[in-house]
Image 1 (tube, rainbow, N blue to C red):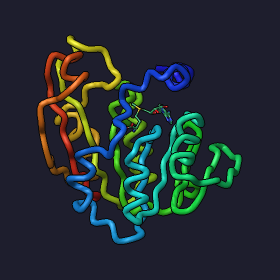
Image 2 (image 1 turned 60 degrees about the vertical axis):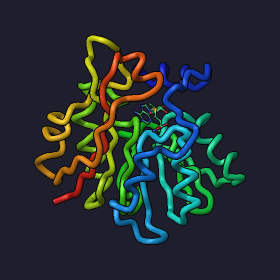
Image 3 (image 1 turned 135 degrees about the horizontal axis):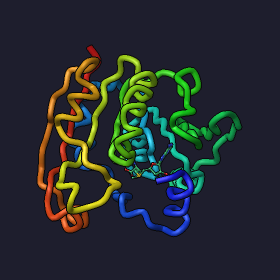
Length: 212
Ligand SMILES: C[S@@+](CC[C@H](N)C(=O)[O-])C[C@H]1O[C@@H](n2cnc3c(N)ncnc32)[C@H](O)[C@@H]1O
C-alpha cells in the first residue's frame, strides 16, 4: 500500500485494524518489558491506537509515529490535550508525556525520537509488505537501541487472504531479529473476529525481543 492508500483509508474510515480498546497482549505482557515508572515507550505506525492512551494513563512517557495527521490529532483530542507542533522532516506533535511524529517512519531519526526504553509493535511490522520489512526491522532496531520490543504478528495461509496485515511467521521473526535479539514466543492463540473470518483461521502471536 502506498502512503496515499493509507491516507485514503483514514479519510474513508476503513480502519478495521483499530481495536478501540487496549491491546490484550500489551495488557497481558507489559510487565515483561521491564519499564520503570515514567519510562518511555515507542509505538511505530501507531495510528490512533488506544494503547497510546492506556500507556499514558499508566504513567509512562509515550511516543508514536504515523503518516496520518488525521489519526494523530484524534489521539490528542481524546486525551484533551492541546499539543505544541514543530515542523521538520517529520512533524513533532507534543503535549504532556505524549509525543507523536507525523510522517514516514523511515524519516524518523533516533536523535529526533529521543531515548526509548521499550517498543510495542502491533499492526506495524505486519502492515508492511515483505520488501519493506527488512528495512523496517533495521530502522526500528536503530531507533530502539537496546530497548526490548513486544511484537504482535499474524500467521495464516496467505493464499486465503491478501494483506495487510501480512503473514509474519516464526521463521521470519527469527530470520529478521535472530542475529541481534533473543526471541521468546510469549503467546500463540487462534485468530478471532474478522481476521479469522477473512483468513479462514490462523494464529496471533506475541513475541518478546531482547537485544543481546
Ligand atoms: C494497520 S495500521 C495499525 C495502527 C496501530 N498500530 C493499531 O494497532 O491500531 C498501520 C498504520 O501504519 C501507518 N503507516 C503505514 N505506513 C507508514 C509509514 N511508512 N510511516 C508511518 N506510518 C505508516 C498507517 O497510516 C496506519 O495508521
